[in-house]
Image (cartoon, rainbow over all chains, first blue to last red; front, side, top):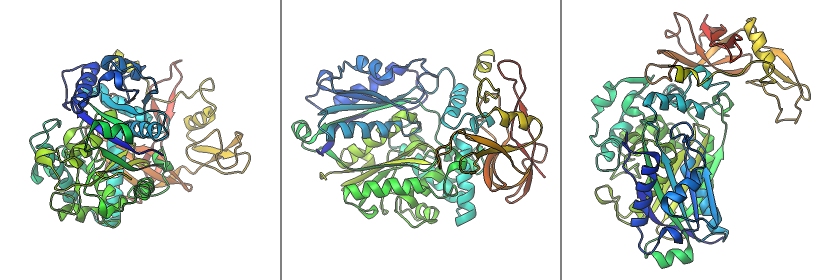
Length: 389
Length: 142
């Protein structure tokens, strides 16, 4: 297989945006093209668009072609949309990676976009029910918060994880987001504010949850040969893994505090990359809810099973610790425009490994990881490096 | 609200709509059942029209107990979809060797603890598109 690298990345402002679905595509596309000199839209051979519910929000399907036209891309090698709920963006990166590695394309853009607050925020919550099983789960009114609340309940029962430890993830990620002008939230949050915020689904409070957010992000992937003509500092894809344990809550093989699919996806990515958890300097993990970040520490191998709460409490996932987790502010601080999230994670790792992350820069970051999930039962992991495989 | 009503979050339960329709017919009578594979005899939750273990798509219906125990629960207070009032108690209950996702209903639904006994209480939801009653398998604290 050929080497593949990120050679450009751009992110729109995330938030409750006064902007159309297409406005967001323009914003992220422009930011991505502006980040790399010498690439014009007509040079791009493929476009993959990660987007989950434009049919329900923008009343639009046929997304990849619509976005290609908006950006002036004329795909000749690859044109596709990925809908895979919250991991749609990273699944799109995997497609582009495979096409380029196989020699079927040399330069592909992957763009993620979601306009969730349309026609209304209330409607957005209703729409989120489409991501779980309609007949056996969504019919009861289930959306994401209670799913992850069940994981939190089981983690607290099994390992003694505390509400304060769950809150510390919110404090850290809201704090990081305050240094990210593209984040949904920019004010930070104290421990008291998180612990006193409104209860969403016991034990998860508002500031432990990602909000309903509009946003878009784009990255440009190139073959090794093309990458070297475009930049002196490409960011290489070193490894990737994806695993499904179960779709419905009651199909998961383990109790909700254990996520074997994340363990399997991470093992595959580490093996392919030739690195271990201890080599990772910076990680963008899927903190849709604070419990998810704690379990991710464990399943990614940053700490032992059950020690996620102690890991954040000791500052080991922050600047100066073992690994900086979610320097851009995570989903809790940046918001979670579903299809855009995995791409925005990749864009942050791109900036971090090139030393361009400004106030958020992780010193001497050489190996970065992204983790994107669709519910508790399905996980995608990417490993990036300053050095090629 | 007519717009929201146009979005139907409930299962299509009739014989015209699903091969699992007998599940709902029995649920309306207060009985909890699931599929037993005609090929290998395995039961599963939720009911299924194809057996991934042996490949058969033939099944019979197997009775499940109407009582179980509470394995996990959460009380959602904010952010429920339109048409689902708060607070809402989402739960996973153990029934006859199966984990079942459900909601707890009734006046005591929010005052529960892990391991508590729960009892099947079919929940009537909005009628189907052709005006037929529809039910979901909910539980109450026993």
